[in-house]
Length: 261
Ligand code: MN
Image (cartoon, rainbow, N blue to C red; front, top):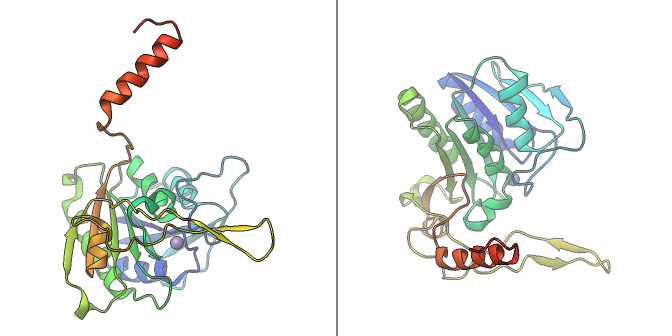
């Protein structure tokens, strides 16, 4: 079994190596990750310049590693199309330091990397711990291993494509309440700007956690209640909601373009 690991925190981040260590017993583990921290880069691809790759001195025996001067999406694209001849059976992105919940996944490099595996019909998952400090990786590493083991055991029986967004609260095992299969919870507090000292310079931050507004069944709710959150995603940002309005709008465009309907 061939497992590809990437992340957005960069190839030197602790989380990806904890993940590699956990998954190494399951098969051949290959790390292809960004040279530098790419958190918040989302699904971006480096379209405007050649992307450098370098062999990286892996701290784990038997684990291959390549660093990429680009984004998590670049890493998975290069790994699956160019760097290696054998196909990958699984893509795991993480373990990210920091939550990837609700609307924030739209700018998540962790999810951005996993998406490229999903687009290529490889079962893929993004794994995050919802804290930026004193991150406890054990639970996430064990969860990722269990998911990987179950998926690899199913082999061709996994209905492709599959994309999971997994988040764990940063608590010890004894405080974990359970596993929740969730949907993405929109975050209501969208104030992203923080001013910096220098005039005219601003800092754009992640969305801030919402007070008590997280709805039951959402990923945010699950985390807030100390559950592991597993959100099955699809890569299609389409919705049937608002169809009547959309039809009316399409009608206006048709009229403007003289198409009569
Ligand atoms: Mn990150």
